[in-house]
Length: 333
Image 1 (spheres, one colour):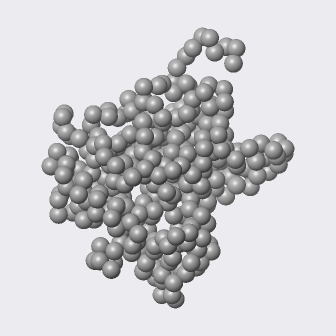
Image 2 (cartoon, helix red, strand yellow):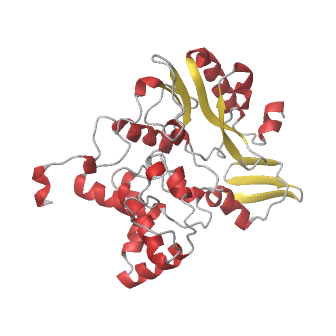
Image 3 (cartoon, rainbow, N blue to C red):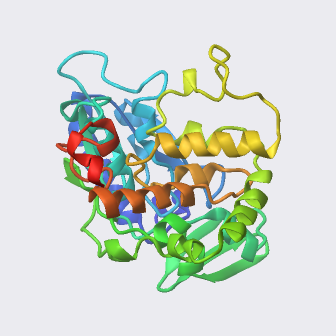
């Protein structure tokens, strides 16, 4: 085993990581920096990293542990964007992440000419919480994929888990595993896990429930919400968080009370503000400390947008999201 494999604790994706290092070194002098992923506090976690020196390029990695959508760093305060005209910043993106870049370009938050995009076709990212529920781990030292299984080594030995049972929910329904925009690809494209028309299975299951059952489901789920706003903060398209309607006091729309009505209002506002804009990257659901399936709300709105308006967010940078336009002819819809 090489030193790189030992450092990453993820053997299978050593080649992709080396390739990423080569591609970054080739263009780093032309960039203000690059945002990617590096090894986290143990072998089961990765974390975002900002690199602007060649001696730090070795910190960059790629593996199915690279779960974060990094596009939000380009628009959140302070934005990680070039300081001077003519300069660029680099960013690593998976397929779902690239849709966020497209959506941000559509809304004029980003200029494609200011970015150098390292696209990484993705076969799914590991949800460490799903893994921990099935295998209580302690002192994780190595994680790797061997065929249809995830192998995790900790202080008690090596544990196996079916690969499909380790993936995040967003990955199980992903129809866009390959970056839609990129300057270079780190690895060969992969086959989509599902077709576009199969993406809303859970939404359709929910639609089969009665209104009373749906209300009971969401009441129970949202009652656990602690209003930490992690879902809002992680969303790359929720760009007005410094003047968010749920926290503003002039005008005042919501209190900071923890009643179910306030929680419902926050999540409905958040979802509706993303109607026709959400790229289903799943960041809101991934960061929720209470594990509430909040992406499911956005998926329902996206299903409606696709069926009525024939529009899918984050696919074509030349299109304008339908709710950002006004067409008098839409009165018959």
